[in-house]
Amino acid sequence: MPPKNADEPENSAETPRRSFPRGGPTAAEKRALRTQLMSMRAKILRSSKDLADEALKGSGQDFSVDHMADHGSDNQEQEVTLSLLEGEQEMLDAIELAIRRIDGAEVPPYGICTACAAMDAWPEGSSAPWIPTGRLQVLPYASLCVAHQEEQEEVEA
Ligand SMILES: [Zn+2]
Image 1 (cartoon, rainbow, N blue to C red):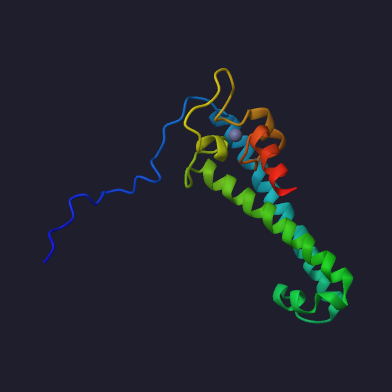
Image 2 (image 1 turned 60 degrees about the horizontal axis):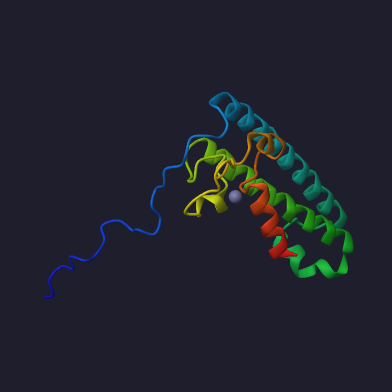
């Protein structure tokens, strides 16, 4: 019987819990942002339901994304609706992730740029790794700072 491997790490070293410099939104700002996120979420859920109802009316069939994906080509309007729903789903996921991060259920903490969080060091004098609170107030579900957002958009373009 081979001896128990003493080299085996007890904890995976791949995802260390990092400590970040002080910064980010205050507790009161986070509460306000959470409220903002919750109302954005409610609004999307309402409008998605309206879109789904609309699609259902048009097709006279049970609404299902799978069904529409299979038969989408014969109805352009349904395709538009479907892609709108997909866009809303993405935003909804981002909003729900942000809420979980505010609640401390996800790392890194809310307000940290997830790309900056992966860096070893941050430029002196910048707000990094924190996303400036002003940006969060405009885009409360943002998970990237402006520089990393632009970088990602270049990759995707
Ligand atoms: Zn960043």
